[in-house]
Length: 238
Image (cartoon, rainbow, N blue to C red; front, side, top):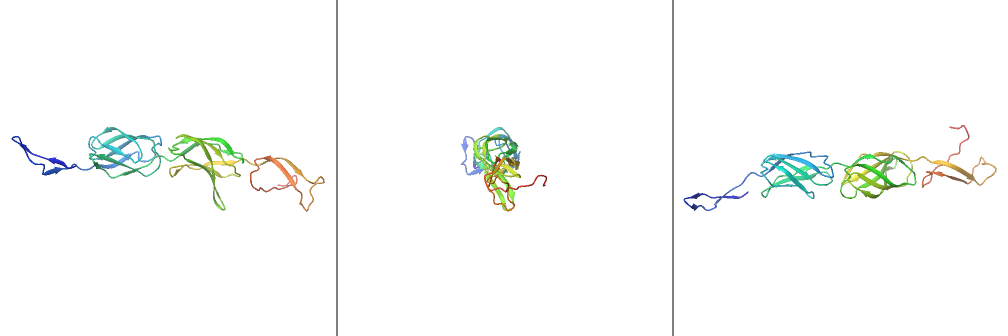
């Protein structure tokens, strides 16, 4: 851009009264433009007037070109996360318009599908594209009162695995969700274990009166931490 034009004749050179500018770079497509691994990967930029060298720019992401021609650039994008990032090409201080690219959202492949109502320590969740910064791991369930959310405590994480303490809770129909840079995994089905009654003690040695009012103590496992309903049924009742 702004290259001076001079004419030399018989050893005399004209003044640079005129300048010449090449067309600015134009990016037409980026392949792939979506689903780029959060650990980085190769992209191919196609367009026009890309020159023979320059810079491929993505805010906050390191990009290294591996080949460059007037209409095609191959480049390795570094680790990143999120959707709607803008890729542009700079050639001799002329910059193209940005083209949107997106890293892949988190995907959960392996996870604990059931757990005790008291919670699970150091549960391992495997998958890919869990991002750079600390992701968020939650259990969610759609209930009559709205969306219930239980937060998990992360212990460690990288692009392909998470170690977290799952919270206490009860019931079925939960979905385990990984969130990273405003992108979320599909819910992975999770169920808290059903309650198991191991013993029942009452403050009446003569049986339960039909009027009720007898204090009972139930012990077992997976009884939950909040109020639960207790039903007494005669043998053979449904």
